[in-house]
Length: 143
Ligand SMILES: [Zn+2]
Image 1 (tube, rainbow, N blue to C red):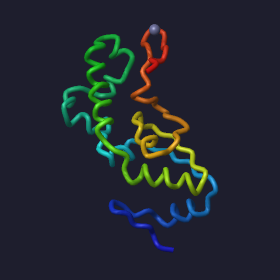
Image 2: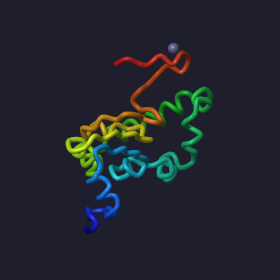
Image 3: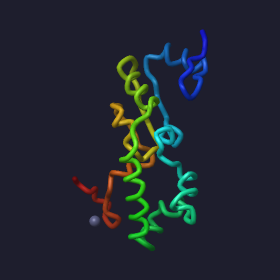
């Protein structure tokens, strides 16, 4: 069996065979998945508008307590960025695979690109950027 080649990468034989032979597939996705759609990773964010700030310092409850408008602006920028991109072939392939196998997706990504491609996400390990909650009592914002 030969490796499967896509436009941007070659999927190793072992992975192709494992998925072909599997009844159930667990997918753990991270920043690289969304980066293909144009969502900058935290590292990438340091090269743009926010280069003088450390994103890991902005993504804390402490940062929010110190300067709520500043942290809100950063999250608003990220939300707008995510809304402006589309799921990529990888997201769509996993949604398609769910029609052939039992697929469970667990992602570190806070965006909704898996969902917009048609997948159900079992867990957003780092939360969802669109799931807002009160910083005092943690009540979710209902929309
Ligand atoms: Zn509250």
